[in-house]
Amino acid sequence: MRIDLHTHSDRSDGTTSPAELVRHAVERRMDVLAITDHDTTAGWAQATEAALEAGLTLVRGLEVSCKLAGHGVHLLAYLPDPTYEPLAHELERILDGRNARLPATLDKLRDIGIDIEESDVRRIAGDAAAMGRPHVADALVDLGVVEHRGQAFDSYLGSRGPAYVHRYAAPLEAMIGVVAEAGGVSVIAHPWAKRHNFDALDEEGLAALKDLGLSGIEVDHQDHDARTRDTLRGIARNLDLVVTGSSDFHGDGKVDHDIGCNLTDPEEYARLVELARDAARVAGRSTPEVLAP
Ligand SMILES: [Zn+2]
Ligand SMILES: [Zn+2]
Image (cartoon, rainbow, N blue to C red; front, side, top):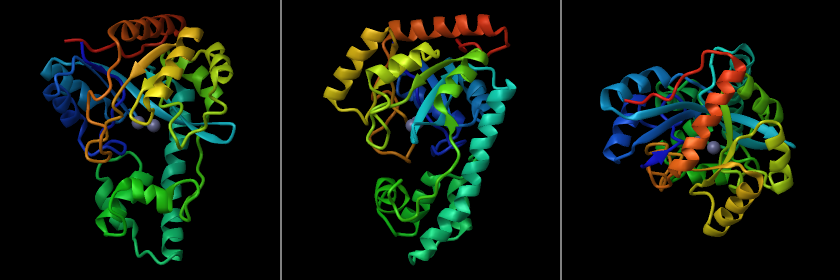
């Protein structure tokens, strides 16, 4: 069984439509795919239709922009009821913050002599639910300012870059609770990736989050080297957290992240789905099921 639980479409900052994402997963011989756009469920309907047609098992999820102790943390939320008011409200707040951030980012870029307009970014962003830094990065590539997205973040858009603008992110601890109340399960995405805060996400920190309802951690991710993966796997075992492995596919938006480059063990996947069933039962909400052909 080939299972990939973390991918993006152009409804956030990927470059393929949700339907193309599903078809690409089929080409890559995937059995289970999760669509997890940033802070939006806007791709769910199209991905659902394509998955039913292609006979692919689809897990509907999203990747929520959170913060913990002042640092950004990405939280993968699987199978929550997206109409649960507190969840919808937080997602709206995050997306509003991201849209407000764009003009400020462009002002800062122009301040340092880079000639870029909102229309340059809009052309790149297409159907995205919100225009974010990856779209600005792609526009900078398009304008020939940098060679690739990573360089745009390193030189300009990252948290230490001259064009960085702070924006709203949901408090992580509260968001874990909200996802549970919405009948879903939470997994911390790439907890020890470079740009994130791994001090607050050490074993003690993760234990505290587990007490709040965290179900798992993404261990096998391209931003984790072999040693990091081993350490995180050990922590997950100690804390009885589900271990996931995924590509974090973004289409052409991220190199070396093709669908299926990391996989989730079928037993771990089964545990996660079981936990989601429990959460849905406790929440008593109408949550999306895993869509199996
Ligand atoms: Zn992420
Ligand atoms: Zn992601």
